[in-house]
Every structure is written in C-alpha cells, then in structure tokens.
Amino acid sequence: MEFQPHHVALTVSNIEKTIEFYKKFGFKEVIRWKAEDNSLIVVHLKLNNFILELFSFKDVKEGAVEKELFEDLKHKGYRHFALKVVNLEEVSSKLKEKGIIPINKINLGKTGIKYFFVKDPEGNFLEIVEDKRKF
Image (cartoon, rainbow, N blue to C red):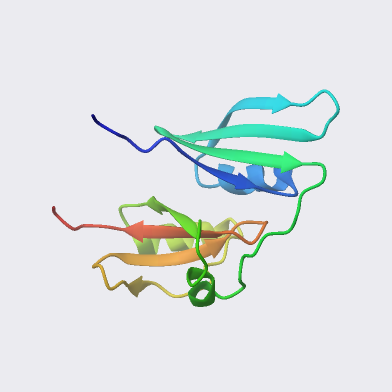
C-alpha cells in the first residue's frame, strides 16, 4: 500500500477572502460546489498535487484556534499545515510585498528545518518551511 498527501480541509466564515489569501501562495481554484439553499459552499484550491478544501457554512461556528502559536499547539486536533519553499528569506520578503506579514521571525526548529508562520484571514496558522534535510 502506498499513500500520498491529498488534501487538508478548513472551515471558514469568509470563503472569498480566504480564497484570495491562498491564491497569493499559488493556489488555483479548481472546484466549487454550492448547496441549492446556500447553506454550504465547498471549494477546492490546488497547489501542485495538493488540495486545500474549504467549507463555508451559512451557520458557521467559531473554532478553538488560539491567538498564540505555542498555546494553539497544546490543543488536540488540526493545528496548521505547511508549505515548503527553497529560500525562506526570499519568500518572506515577497509575502511582505503582498501584504502578508509573518507572525514570527525565521526560526530553526527542533527537527532541523527553518520556518516562519503567517495567519490566514480566518486566523488559521500556515507554516512556511525550508527543509534541506536528507532522509
């Protein structure tokens, strides 16, 4: 049996604003489904072979995302997903030009990768990593 990453799902309150945010990272909208009664919209955004699945419910409920990254990591369940880049410093500068400000400085993680985080319009953490490890 062989498995490959396929998608991560997020529930959001403002789907259009969230789509525009992720398009700045190179995601493209590939699927949009809308319930007849407008109670739900599902959008698939694709980046290479990875899909970000967005759900937007008319009666969306607030989640338990903490404002501070370290405190958020203490909760069970989904905490963030990461996008890998070749040059972290260059990407950080380009994102700032697009109005996306990292919430922390570039760090070297305990597992040997360099990283920083941003937040999407819904407050979800998105990690940007430079991983040159050889396994």
